[in-house]
Image 1 (tube, rainbow, N blue to C red):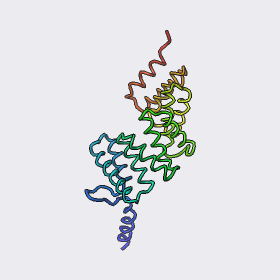
Image 2: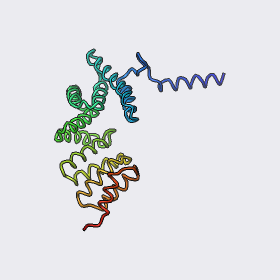
Image 3: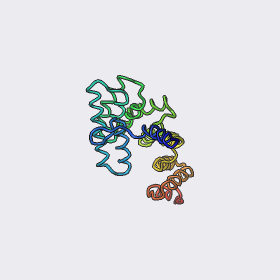
Image 4: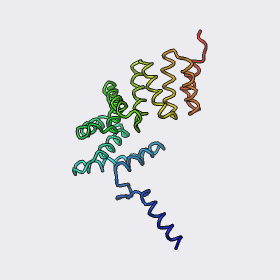
Length: 224
């Protein structure tokens, strides 16, 4: 009897771990499909990822057309379209969502990314700063600070970029690309010892990083 009670407790404890699925065995919510697609994409399984992304978009569109959409609907939709690199559509649906809730910061950050990839840096910067000013330690704050750094780097405002990258890395220190970018802007500013430190950290995280190795060699090379 004791074993039976333990088994029942185990089953009911584990039930939430297994999301309900719809036709074809796919999860029933758009966010679930988006997250599975993102994980598959991270594993370079793009063909499979696209199936889940397409299902996420379908669910979102059904909810919008059926007047049952929530802010999670618009968040899942814009996140998925961003992964599909449909940046103009991210802007379109993001604007509609922000007319419903102007403070949906998940979408505000995503809009910043979409404008960045559309090369509209002023608008991208506006959205990213809007996010970090409201949620400086929010879930997407590291990414927002990174994109702020990218914009300043492209605008050749290297010391501004240094501050943004450094802030991003304080929140998410395990990103080798971000350390490499920090090394670049420090090198461009003539701050060679801090640049060496940044390049070295990029290589500690990713020893097979040729650009970081080249950057480290440049700043260590005696001037002639």
